[in-house]
Image 1 (cartoon, one colour):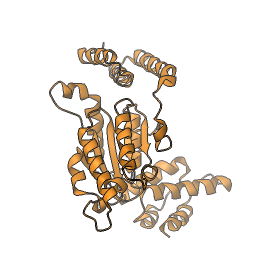
Image 2 (cartoon, rainbow, N blue to C red):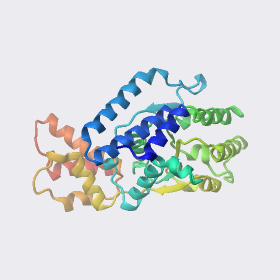
Image 3 (cartoon, helix red, strand yellow):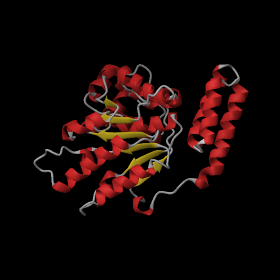
Image 4 (cartoon, rainbow, N blue to C red):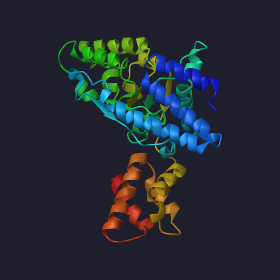
Amino acid sequence: MATPEYIKSLIRSHSSKEPERFYTIALQLAAHEARQGHQVLAQEIRQIVEAERKKNASNVIPFPVDLKGMIQQVFPDDRKNTLILPNELLQRIEQVIHEYLQRDKLKSHGLIHRKKLLLLGPPGTGKTMTARVLAKELDLPLHIVQVDRLMTRYMGETSAKLRQIFDLMQTQPGVYLFDEFDAIGGNRASDSDVGEMRRVVSAFLQFIENEDSDNLILGASNNQKLLDPAMFRRFDDILSYNIPTGEEAKRLISDTLNIYMAPNFAWKTVLSKAIGLSHADIVMACKDALKSAILADVNLIKPTDLIRFLTQRQK
């Protein structure tokens, strides 16, 4: 039986003509019914939502012509269990998901869910994967802003395109990821900075401060030292990523190789070769070992096989 909160949220989202919110709440209701043991009803609700989404896919508002090629829209399939990160970081990501799903309840008490996140850490440590997981768990499209294509040498043009992106957020629900964020969020006090870049940073600060949609806005940077200090105050939460620990590397390898791992895997030797590698490096080394085994018609991967590719990644 649907709870009063779900019913009220469904009515509000339908009345305000917000289909994505309506679908999200309906899927929450399906999950609630599944927890109550009503599996058939839960599956029927999911099927209805999926059918309605497909039917309305052609009605999605297109990106403005000026922004085509600058925003990549994807629909990830990555769930929370694909993230192998420290427990504290996983809990904070879970809090973002929980607050988003309960945002109407927070609004009724004058509060706003966490929606502006700054992701900081070395390349390949899970920042983009986090954006993909958030999009999947919240059943939203992921809009990846191609920052390199956003930047131009013409005065005022980059700021104008930024304004178009933030205007787009009012009509296109989703998770918006500004990757390589330091390109537009760089320190205005830098000696190498130019006047136009200062204007871009100032424009972004103004846009993100005034942004009032329910969308998640993520800025991802490999080097926080390059960011303007004012950026940190504009985000609701700052998530820091690091090179995986030995235990995290072990889980990455186990999850990727799975049934292809040879028995009595020499973990100590393997993990010693993974020290200093990012999550992405370790996963790619595992996939290289898998491809090599498949092409050689080998059913099991031995530690020496994986060590060879981990060593290559180290170099």
